[in-house]
Image (cartoon, rainbow, N blue to C red):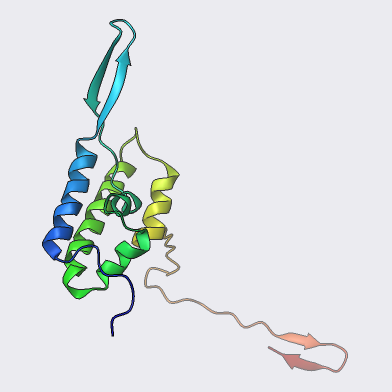
Length: 146
């Protein structure tokens, strides 16, 4: 007995085509502007960043529903590939001085498992570590403790 809402996309091809349509939309998004000198409206391409929430919206799914598709074996590769493409776009924008924001870092940490890592080398470069023993004497009863 199946429980839950039926899948919006029945085949991998159907989902893949719609995902590619989203990326194409982002790459070729038309925006309109207005030239005050000529009093004319014009259109130009202004690419939109890839996001998982944007992809979910374009597919008419919630973010969670999109994640759930990954749990269905036949859709796994398609969703993972789309996620990698979104991650790659965010990573690229980290290095773009015109689009870098702390939000990109937040996104990569929370959605793609990235981590800040500080490493400190506490070795002695192969040299033996000298240890010292300190002896405390309890002057009241004359006992020693380490």
